[in-house]
Image (cartoon, rainbow over all chains, first blue to last red; front, side, top):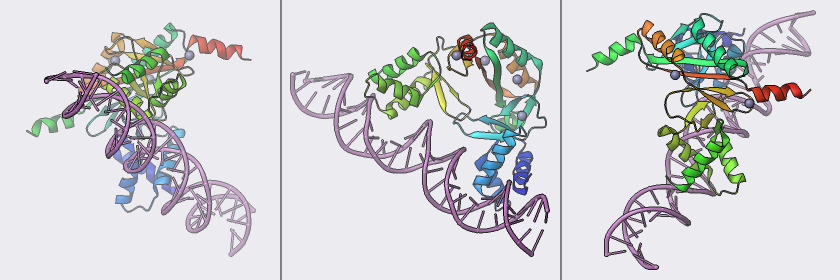
Length: 130
Length: 130
DNA sequence: GCCATTTTTGACAACCATTTTCGTTTTCGT
DNA sequence: ACGAAAACGAAAATGGTTGTCAAAAATGGC
Ligand SMILES: [Zn+2]
Ligand SMILES: [Zn+2]
Ligand SMILES: [Zn+2]
Ligand SMILES: [Zn+2]
């Protein structure tokens, strides 16, 4: 694990929510790092290949990454305002997806599931800003 | 509804699976249409804004579209090989997502759910090609 | 039908996230 | 310390998508 990659991983861990490559690049540069954008992309590629970080796509197609507590299969409840995420685990949706696939004769079934909303903190802030 | 937009909608309906803007542009041109790529993008934008077609993002961030039978909320079981899709409806995953959001104090909860696999036809073809 | 206004279209350029290239720097094994 | 291998970063290239703008087509009185 190179120093640069470790720096990217740390920046992502500090963020606790989903961040884009460009976000992380800005974060790192603003705290004085001389890292290049290419290296941020390469680090994120490597981290996601090895399963250390999760990736998902925003509505406009940008890739965003998160350093999750667990590396085992899970989903996310993501705040639309601050992009903080809660990790979700449970058999319900796993079983549901498997059944759906089997019912229609599909093999090698996988699924992508994300839940979005406004977190309690952001909901409160929205109400207070009258 | 302009003729061009209708042509795009028809091309998408004929496809029955998820197709990208560039796919549809190629389809239309190959059948003799003189449509421009910009117009295909505009038509898809309008169709998705009005809820007539569904959009999702591939792993590499490309937007793909589908003309679904229903305009009400549903999900898809998509073949990874031929991109044919089956429309999925049912309360299980809807209730699950709502509960997950509520449990964590999130408001305005929505979700994205897609199931992927290899359809029966494509599975069979894969086995036959020894 | 005919002209003026509005809408739609498409070639081209601009955008922007991401990838590739390639010469330089750092790391690692000996 | 020394040479090979890996990592780095600036700049250029890529590719999907959007913006621009002038031409073409549809619309609506008359
Ligand atoms: Zn996660
Ligand atoms: Zn799952
Ligand atoms: Zn198939
Ligand atoms: Zn649903």
